Amino acid sequence: MFVPLAVDPFSSDSTQIIPVTDTTYMFENLPENTKYYFWVRSNCGGETSPWVTGGSFRTACDPFATDSLPYVEDFDSYTASSSVNFNSCWTIKQSGTSYYPYISTTNHRSGSNSLYFYNCCAAMPMMESDVNTLQLTFWVKYSSANPFAVGIMTNPSDPNTFDTVATGVATSDWSKVEVPLGGYTGTGRYIAIRTNSYMYFDDITVELLPDCPRPSNFVLDSAEAESLFISWTENGNATSWEVTCVGGADSIVTTAYTNTNFEIDNLTPNTAYTLRITPVCDGDVVLS
Image (cartoon, rainbow, N blue to C red):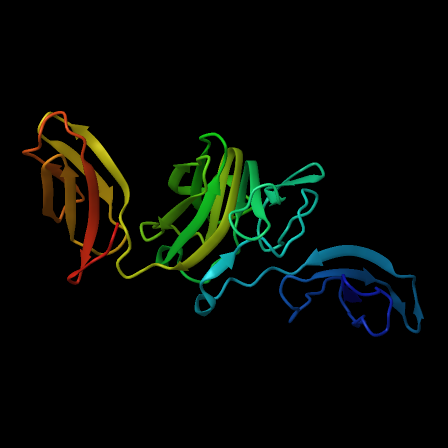
């Protein structure tokens, strides 16, 4: 006999009694993400023993379907509490009677809630799509510059499967973080966030990677008196990039080909410059 959690276990309208001739049995065709209790009793040719409880189980969540993207979570539909897992399709850390992260009303970018982290990892529902076809966007905030990491997991219950794809630092204002996942080469389907300190996250979105995604990891590798060297990570299929360098009386727009690193020279010494890199995709340039 088995029954969903939300109904009276011994109500005739809510139970299924299944004759079984073996000491094992597989329940099939059950709805996803539903908790059940189950019992067993012996049938001795007309006489039956008392019911013995076997415990409970929850059916797994179906992968989030590609044709249902974007996946959007603003955390406003949950009750603020650290004593429950706010969404059983997320895998989060339990410490004693508390769960991390948990729903908080203290800080929120939109609505009334956000997700509050402390020294923990949270894995989102499994994605049906290959992760390298997706892009993650979220907003993050904390009063001090605490670091965080975005990763992909093959097993959300095993922290050792966390494969870091991006890192960042929270600021005292809500800041938007965009993480293209096109460079991921593993087999994981669980997008996860990990922190070693306090932090608030809000308005998480997982969507299909744009045709011409922004570059990431844009780094100033070195700077001399009249030149500088930059590098970046391409997240799509671009093979050329427009590089803009503006400062003082200089306004340099040039194109880098083939390599995701570039030297800009003929600069004015002791001058502050602003740099921008944009990929060129089939003749189109995307703002980066």
